[in-house]
Image (tube, rainbow, N blue to C red; front, side, top):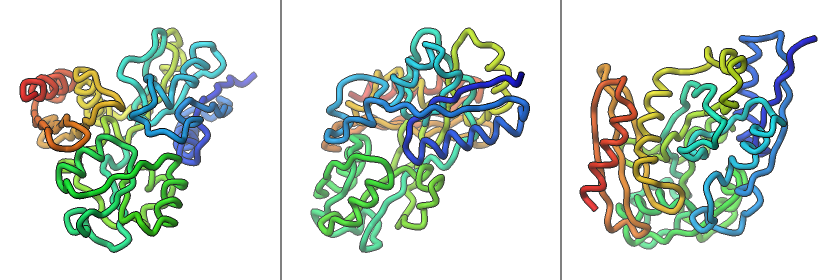
Length: 298
């Protein structure tokens, strides 16, 4: 009898695209193993009338999936890494961090303007405190309005609201759904910093399941693992989540690992940056050093 594994995922088009992408990669490696997909609704999917920063608790888009994994209802889970809390529940671990998509942010503008050329007091859609902080740091006059929902819902709200001048979404999700043709400008991730782990997919498994871990090992992308380790160690050291504006971008250049990170306030007035470079094998320590550098500026 063929071995059967069940993959847990959220039900949005993006989450399903990501899960089917991993499913395809896995089938190419292990065509003899049967895969099933189980859709699981999370707290973050159910509460759509509040900004993420106002919803209490970690794991808004992951807890219910992780509960299924711990209970043995599923064998692996596919997540956007940026949604995963830095401290995984006891008994769970990473099976693989796969090759990372574009980490940058994409800016939508009905006028085609870049952020710095928007009219005074232009209105921007975003529910991310990280995006709001950076926008107001660059342009204190901008008016920020909350928007929730999946990517397609947010784009629809943006297009149908004549009062909204612009919006920011993650480039990776847009590319995966074939919606990047709507983008006015991509923002340099070294200038407008993304969420920690943005663009990367994480496969989560039970820590006591070495057989599944072995099956997933070939899917791990080493550079993606190193850069996201640096970013997430920064996040963990800062004790951050949705309630505090912060972000980081890490990249490999000339056999060195670089990270640029920031933390600020919701008004964009008090913002601290750190830029650290070090050896590839010191990814976690580099993230921690970035956090310590920022804490000293507070």
